[in-house]
Image 1 (cartoon, one colour):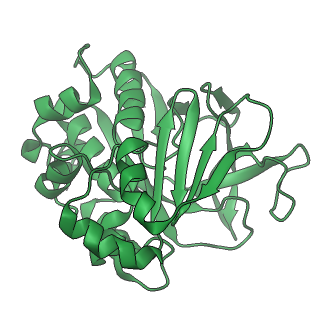
Image 2: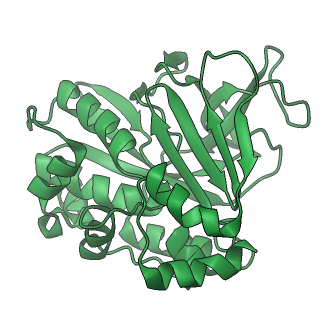
Length: 292
């Protein structure tokens, strides 16, 4: 029988350069597996490791082994999707001695449709409680979210509600809500909140992420395989790039978000200046035709 600790070792933490990862995060604090350490690591990861799908757009492939993910996201000024984030983050948590497991969820963003499980998250078990550490959404919460049926969180950028409910026909699970922002074409609660994503506590392993990652990177039916998407979160603003549409959202600032359409040849400089993503000359040559 596989024990819980043996299960944790499946995340290949021994292949991670932990010092390099923590240096990338700017983490200089405690490394013991406490709630304070977890809160710090979560926030630092969200603010330091970019979200982008460029590898899928350019090559229809995203390696998920720890050495490849680390070389891309730590050794180079690049980012990754939730599967890459969780692969890196889980390896670090394993090395630091945290007890955790990985789950996948259905991204809804207000849709009533049953969508595939294409979003990976980490559930950490600590001090008799369970905490959702959702580091790979792009505009991820800056705070941990305790798994209770009445958790409300405001992190200075976004607001979130976690509720236990039916998440697919006949199946109970968890739904993470965020304000709908006045959008009328989506499904919302009576007080204007929409479901961001849902999940159950069915445990996932690296092999499961490999399957979902392959679909997301290579399938023509995946929304992430052909359209350039990047997100970068700051404590006071969010930058988003959807193909050539650049949007900046400043929470608490009156008025609509700042949005403009870029010319294709502007995109590489915007990737560097705003998102901290530096592409090689070869990658830029591959990218430009996909933006026209």
